[in-house]
Image 1 (tube, helix red, strand yellow):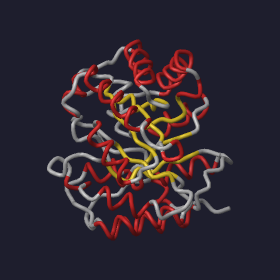
Image 2 (cartoon, one colour):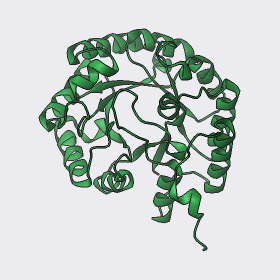
Image 3 (tube, one colour):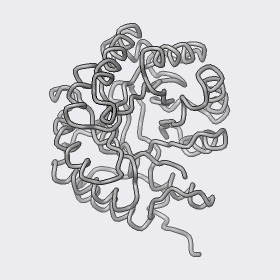
Length: 301
């Protein structure tokens, strides 16, 4: 089964000026779970003054945890954020490490060495938890395919940072095309290189953007190579506010349609997914929503 990890409540909402009411976030998450979504990145533990859109993340985690079987994921920028995530009870923590150090300084205001220090501190916090209560810890290799601030990113640097994240205590790494630079050939090559360097079990997922229209092509390349987890955002909301020109994520509705039309099981009911989109639309009136499949509808059987 392919895991579609919905990142709209974090990556999508952080990129728009509108602050979605907490109750609306609850309703959106409930609708996504009803559609069969099994993992949702519900927010980020960052200072509210930086991202007021995500100031209620602890409350959203608490609500999402009511859904049995749902993996409640959050992004944490540092050990302080991880402490808050642990207190809230998140099941999965993701620390972004930008392979472009220029982007890292813009996004987290930290060098590579400083982010790795945070990774070690987070790993220690997790290790101090009771064994059955330790969340999964992912280190995200952000801007792995290129950076709007720095340009090309050497693949050798991505491999070095992936090894460093695992050594610092991450359970696995994720591959992220934060700025929409990737192409299918590059996706295949970098996945294989990381597998050779780290082990196939240490990289299972990818986070892709559709900035230049290659999102689904890159997802298919990753799928054919062997990855099984794909981040996407309902209605294509999202993009990094600290990477100029990095527009939205893969549209969840389009990704699910592509996978299921290929005969692959995502566990997601498309009609109910469209109902979740209606909940989202009602909560963000006037906000542009994207997706080819929602516009065209499903083909007749």
